[in-house]
Length: 246
Image (cartoon, rainbow, N blue to C red):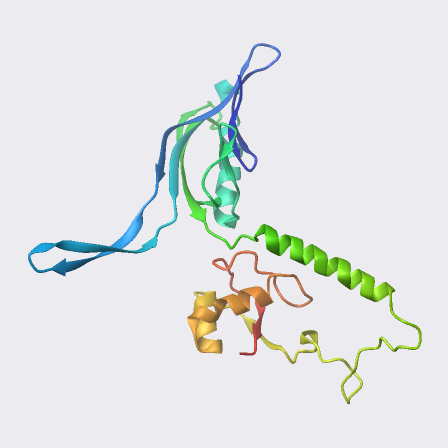
């Protein structure tokens, strides 16, 4: 008896409650797929030469069984999984006490198949098919973390250790105000329309779709009047975002 694994609030476990009632949340048909893309270069009189162009993200699929007879609330658990899918927030997937894959995963697809109902129409048992996809992101190295800590310490020392008679005031512009991005000179605003993507906005506003990261980085933190972008692949119509000047 114990915990099998978890993904966010969804915890796979096999337990027995105090009154002897079962508390089980498990899965079946587990599959983990890894693949690469490749091109074939034909050679005269020989087998073609294979060139690996890139790797695809890992994909994990499983069937989660939800039953009221096993101490679960099928509809409540299904809603949690559905929200994870729609929010597209990456989370670590653990099984057997170990984290799976090199990166976190997002739920790319989830479908619910009710199998049994109470007389009042409530779902008693259901099978939920879930597809997890790996979500690659740039990891910070240990050296980068230590160097950033050293920089923050040095900044703290400089602030409190200024010498007497030496001015520590920063120069200001002729108008008497500091030039900052917040003054509106470093970016323009844009209202997201239906069908927009960061790639398409970057192509139209900055001249190249590959510059979408500039827009994403400019909107990673919340600011007054602008919407925070948590996931570069998920933007909604009506959001007002910053477009940095290229």
